[in-house]
Image 1 (cartoon, rainbow, N blue to C red):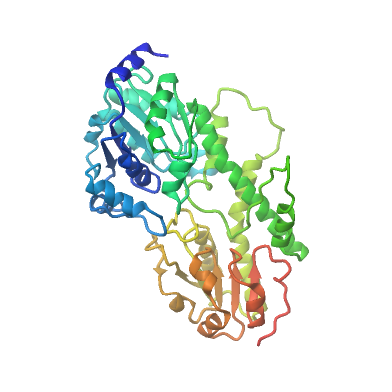
Image 2 (cartoon, helix red, strand yellow; image 1 turned 135 degrees about the vertical axis):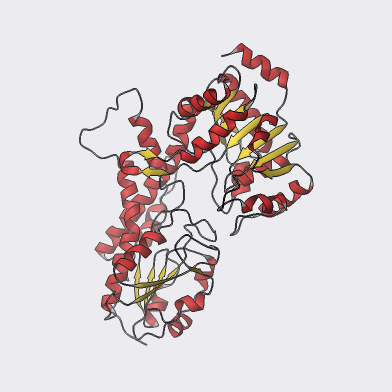
Length: 478
């Protein structure tokens, strides 16, 4: 532990001014919660003035949220802290020199999962900007999900090279991974325990000081930087594994002609002391920025470790296998769709498919890595024409997103539900059938949104994930 770092941190006193780099689903709520705390004086939100994201700067400075979908309390809090002059958004990264602590919430996708090669371009750019303006006694915190070893490795090297300062001596460095889900961002930051891992004891303590004022029911859990990195990648990897388990069970139930939800309810009914299983829900695929790549960060952390992994020879990682199962679900949706068209007496080529839901999460505009995209690509490859509806997603590169539900469904041969938006639970079979104007309309439910019997009785060819009890129903038009 560096006595010099402790000395300059003591001389600096409490953290008062904060910088947050990355105005997205993580950075915005974090920044405004810091700004709303009496413990802090001013928060700078740093955002590149790029063609794709620069619009966020003016919106935030007007007190408006650039995030769409249902996000309780966020826009109101942004407006409050802007009016109080406690939060400002800027593209001027030189302001980093004025803060006592700076956090980075930047996406860390994988360029090539098969070769465990992450795309750290954006993260490196952000860390480099911090290094250029880093001053003595500043706390730097990585919130992005990263390969274990990155905080004390790549990030530390860049910061030291750019600043001429030494981590753990002249400035504090830590990893405090975000643990939020779209639709409950503010609540998650306040109520979830915060994992905080510094590269040394002084860094950990300083980071705990930063996050404690915004925690309500949540508490700080200190550990090493690498342990914090592994904690974050593991919790997402385990969730992905749980989803893969129920998805594989859904495929099994389809093959055996039974309802996966009956099985799920039966398994879930066994409760009591010592019973800790958690069984999730099957679906058309896993999307988002986290679960689709965090397994690979964990795998890469082992690969680059100095220690040898003792593991059964020739066996795939169960975590990577789970990833492959979840990646298969949009393919399965495509297979169900083609099979349903055949039962309706149609070929895929020339058939119109109406995709309902582009976002990967219910009642959200989050369309990062949506399973709807590979499903759409497969349909197009089979010769289908495809229209997409989503009530929350405004736009997506290369895909026309309509907000006119009736217009998308009208004249479709197939309606495929990819997202469980609230609006889709209100669909009426008679209304959908009248819009489709097909002798044998097809509906494929990837999220268990509709009542299968209602649609079958209305004359639809029905297919659903895990619905082995209904997928081979006797079709009869009413």
